[in-house]
Length: 252
Image (cartoon, rainbow, N blue to C red; front, side):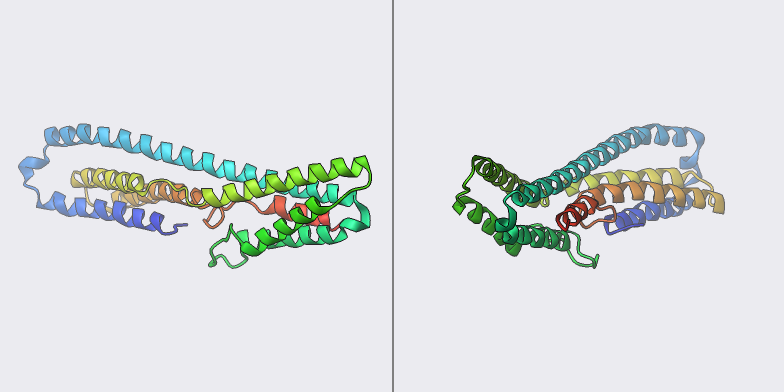
């Protein structure tokens, strides 16, 4: 359920609640009255609103980034299929190029979505880049006899350029992450909220259970934000299905 930052968030938030119970027992009775409780809760409501706004923005930003990567993979897979069809129009002369394209596609799937989840995805693979460069060089050097094949060669070169552009874009985006200070601040705010609630709460199993469920819920939200920043290696990953379908179409 939790990967890294989510587990840290849960320990901090739920641990802060337990600290709040301890502090509540240490405070003098005069500082635990109804008036004090209302004043503290009113003040912490501002923190609660800020926490909800920032956490909501982080989740929305992460989801937008995740959806963008998904669309880029779908476009990448579509361009691979279109390039294979363009090469097929050249007949047997392009058999070697189509074989290279299949090898390129298979390698991109293997390196971007490794079967072992313990391995980090590799979006910039020199061997895959070399395969695509070879295809491009062969297309540039080719001299199609007919006008239709010349148009097909131009279209194929354009598709290769788009594949290179998208591949590079995905590589650059891999380092674009949500600033970690945002997550640290949100976790701190949520921890302070739990401290303020626990100070005035009765210590019983029902209250502890409710705080546990709440801590799990908000920590899961923090974890989702972190996971969507890593669309190819997190708990929630961009689907490799479009790329796998493109590879399957090349076998036809």
